[in-house]
Length: 267
Image (tube, rainbow, N blue to C red):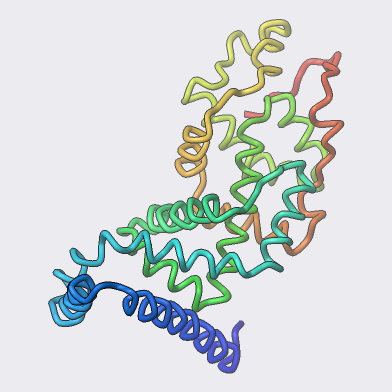
């Protein structure tokens, strides 16, 4: 839990970011011709003096531009970025957490959390500002990214690879119930893996070893519709706290060798 002193420190850091942006804007405004500077100042005055509803209309088109510059500040959290990258590499996931990717994940996290809580998403700019002010929110964001990338990896596994993955886990039943069953159910209903004649060995072989081919856009849709943001957050948190939480052996899971026995039914 954050202490009062740590909150004060983060608030000071957050204010510093806003002051830095304000000074940069002032410096830029002074370089403009007087007529352009007059328009900028008029817009700022309108934004301050009008009602919240009109302010929302005026600032809506500026949100993305301001938020993008604030995302650069979040990227300065090098330690967390390096840790998440290190954790992902353990699962052979090469993900460059550049500004574009981070920006996309912030939007996704904002939408997914609102979807889970069944409420309207907050404004993107407000969400980014909250991330800057709150170390806990940034910690949640990075855990969400970690959990989501691992879930995406499992969505792209064949059912045989699922079987090999869960066999490595200490608590197989919990792992199957929490992740494998929801993913395979989503595979079924979305026509990604379609089981036919499940009790016939050779028929079963055809769909069980099939490697799903899912576009990135569809993959994100599947993740958001299959799991709540809290489940993904908890997975990322568990992995970041204990790298052995999810046992992973790439060579075993992705081996091309087919088992001789009848496959176990996981769903």
